[in-house]
Length: 487
Image (cartoon, rainbow, N blue to C red; front, side):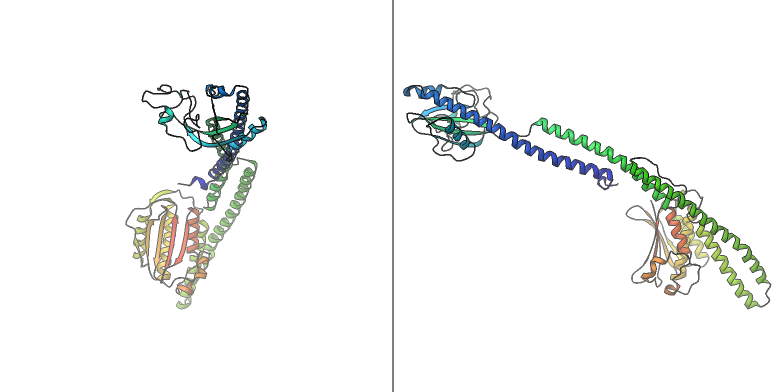
């Protein structure tokens, strides 16, 4: 099965989705930072203004009433108390410093300190199945929760960060949210201090609607990329199939002209090339057929005249030359027909063909045997494949003194017809020339004669079936010829 990432469509979709995800991640990071910063600054400004307002009102109240007035104030996110000492004596940075600076700017002749931290606390609006204040177990909620951290609202000096005060929002079973809690101490005119416990918004996750919108955008962009790449990938795949068919020798091959203009031009150019190439190959084949056919008449006349020669030795030498000319003519005609046969393809058992062929050759004195016990089915033109197998077997017997023909499937399920011999092999620099017409490497293998067209014919047959012919030396000696056909 083809890996989707190895196709144009798969890679375009993957790259597009990856680019969209990265862009959304960057946008979300910027959005979350700006959004959170704006919310925090707005909340800090609001807290500072409300603390300033409360401090100004308390200054107008008699000193003995300030503590009760501060504790009676009720605010959704603020709790107030008045004491003789500040709860916070120094600023430690973060939101607290900004709040303290804002209070100092708004409240003349005043000293302000603030500290803040991020905690997990129950939301102010939480309401559960519990009473207010005392739950009947003899302990207040702040006592059950334990003492707050040092510097954050000790019991008896007013509510600390996260203390829900008198509202119905505490409890061990309450859900928690991440918030910023701040303790603010502001000096009043008589030397007393207004202590404020404030709750500010904490870090906020990206809204679900934004995530859903991003996922929808990624899906839509992915579908669009798949459609666009499909408009390019399908015509290119058709063009590749047409090129493969043309390379295998199929006649009248053409690629569908579709897709974008660039791909259409490529398909049109391929079709023109295929048409011209087909005409040229047909002319060459027809010329070779005609020459091979026309040579039969003078060869036959020479043979008849040779029979009339009285000198036996001269007659045999001439007849041998005539026989060689006939063999060359027949092989040239076979080469011209290879890959251009009109024989219909059929599903045959190549193992059975190998056993039958090797049996016939052994009866003729050719030293070749078959090792093909298991059936190996293949769709091919049987006569052409049998001719190719015969050429390989005869080459092994002629140049290697004998051989073995094996038929099996390889790891990629291709059909392999393998012929091995124990001959001297071929010099490595000549291996690539063995399939050239009329080339013989006799000097490297033996003194056997031949026209040098057997492997060229086999190569043409392999090409016409979409297969390949692999020729290689064996170690330490011998030669291997492998005809590989699609499964």
